[in-house]
Length: 71
Picture 1: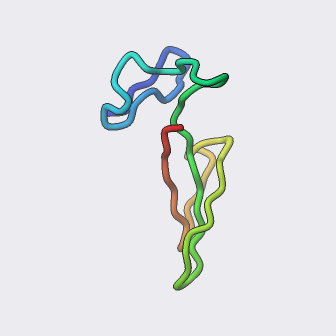
Picture 2: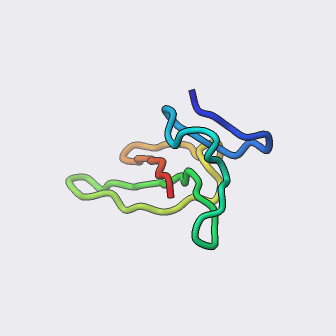
């Protein structure tokens, strides 16, 4: 199960990172799970775009891909 903090920030997916790491300052910013949207043309490679809204705002269509990355 994913782990969230009290404000709803996604803290962990499949136990990574280990608790209590959540919204911890790192190098002038914060480490967090980012959500990316990709579009893959037939026979091509995905083009990735950072999403400011997350998966709730997204309707998937044929050829779309999505990913989470801890940054």
